[in-house]
Length: 244
Figure 1 (cartoon, rainbow, N blue to C red):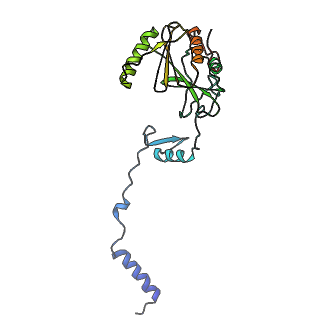
Figure 2: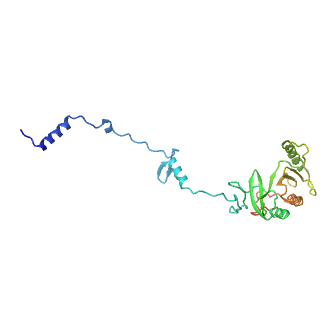
């Protein structure tokens, strides 16, 4: 019996479907396991709006999108935007205002030492006050509060430490001329004064050549005369001003 080509093709297809081995993996037909819901508290994910994203991806995208920030206010140039003080530090990345008051008066110091401009203050271990003088790096004075109640005790403690560092047994603080109870000392271009008048001694530090001795004496006199800030009081202004 003669079969047409189309009939032969149909017969081959039927035979193959019924007899040829299947190429489908039975495992692929098994039911898929139900995925567990993602916990919003999982540290690996971050919720943005109503959706959850991998934390690493979000962090990477934020770093790319964030604009490069410049120096913090007061770093490298004076800034008063904080409303608390004129903030200034030559190189600190994120300077802060000095919290305590020490009786320091920027106007008195500027006048006593013939300085051009008061730049501002910042705190790093001690409080630094900076001034500008033409043709010079920023000039600084630093102040701190010591645990001693008497300037002589504070000066003696300072002298003992300095003698060990400098290996010079002759180093010793001396009375400040014309200011009763105050002492000062000098070593290797640095100078210190120990100021009476408050419950705790205040230490004033500066560099040799910053100001004349007469100017420093005037500053120390003003520090002695200044009154401590009343408890809970606010600063008298953006610039350090002695309470008299």
